Image (tube, rainbow, N blue to C red):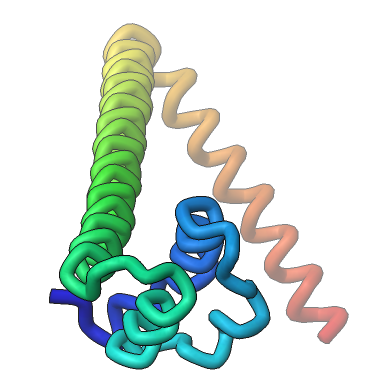
Length: 139
């Protein structure tokens, strides 16, 4: 059965389809029935001579189409979100793999050249200490 919220939610499409089925309906007149199923059905019945049951079935069919389009849109959104999540997961895996390789390379360098590694760390620490001292002195 057609409900007022369902009718209001798809009103513009419904007006277009009603006018396509029954061209004698005035689109401006239809606007006054937005959400009022009984009054809309009565208006259509008076202007077309169509049986009320047939009109209600037509309205139910229109709303079923609208619901199926909504379900299709929701499925499309779910598919897109799933693809985005999969892509993000792959990107994270690639970054994590690069980080592991970088760590392994650094560990290998330290093992092969411990003196150079200690010297590089000492130089970096001294440089950072100098920069911090200058910033503190200026402030």
